[in-house]
Each structure stands twice: as structure tokens, then as C-alpha cells.
Length: 210
Image 1: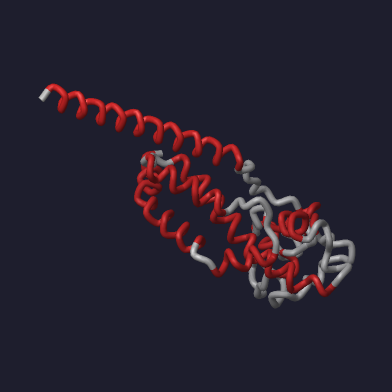
Image 2 (image 1 turned 90 degrees about the vertical axis):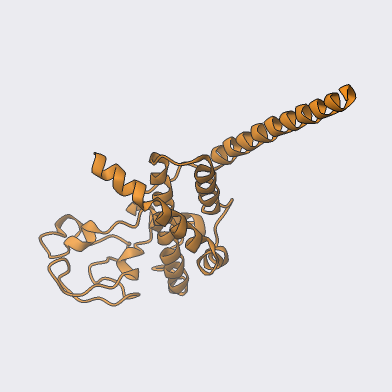
């Protein structure tokens, strides 16, 4: 009987040590995963972009836009050097929608990370590829921003780990056009939206408490 108790005690001790070790490893992996992800930038930098929003977006004549423009068509106010001819007077000229639009940094990421500073204005063959990349990268930036905001919510350990895993999926070592297209067609966007949906009640409660 005494030997049986000793064996049970030994098993429990081994199990406890194993549990503590696995917990420590999981925490270390979480720390390493967080450290490996660069701090996201959601501030648009038009100086590093090839004027993608000036081409990609469609808009109708309204109180925010003075003209109609189709998606993929360059804005008539766009100069050959990629600068807006009326940038300092957008409100006065009836283009307040341009001021309000925010790509969340997708424009410069596509221009610099994916196309290495190239511009469709110098090589028009790049235009459809840059527009596709811009559309997908804008989605990535938006999802990433929402996941970053979720850090402020009271998440369980499981939810925290899940949020970190989803963030990591948005930050591979590199992005290129095939990877962006595979991302858009894959499961991750839907998984992120489903995860964020579960957090909505807490987000609403947090806003009401403020």
C-alpha cells in the first residue's frame, strides 16, 4: 500500500512538473510570437505611395465629390508626378471625401513592400496588379487595426492566444501578390471576422462605461 501511494505521488509530481513546463513554454512562445511581429502602422503616408487611392476608388458626384469617377480610372486632378493638383484646396473644390478617406497605410505598404517603390504611372502594366494588392492590403490593415484594438478588452487567456495567432497570420515574413491573393481566398479573413464578432458585446459594454 505504501509503495502504491509513493507511485501515485510520483505520477502526480511528474504530471505537475510537466504541466508547469508546458505552461512556461506556451508563455515563452507567446512572448516570442509577439516580439516577432512588428508594431503595425496605420497612418497613411502619401509621400511613399503611388497615388493608389486616386485610381482605385470609385465615387459619385455628391457633396463629398465634385465629379463621377469609375474604379480603376485616374482622378483628373492627379498630376504626372503622382501628386494631387488641388491637394491644398480639396474642401473648396468639392472633394472633401478625399480628405476623409483613410487607407490605413495600405498604399505605402503596397508601393514599397510589394512593388519596391515602383509606380503604375511609369509602367502602366503594373496598374491592375497594384490595384489588386491595394484592395487586399486595405482589408489586412483594417483587420489588423481591429485586432490591435481588441487588446484593450478583457480577454480570457484562450482569447488572448487566439488574437495573437490571428495577428501573426497578418504578419508573414513577406507579402507578395500571390500571397495576398491566397490570403483573400483563404480562411483567415473569415476567422478573424468571426473572432471579432464574439467580442462585440464587450466592446459595446466598454463604450457604454466610458
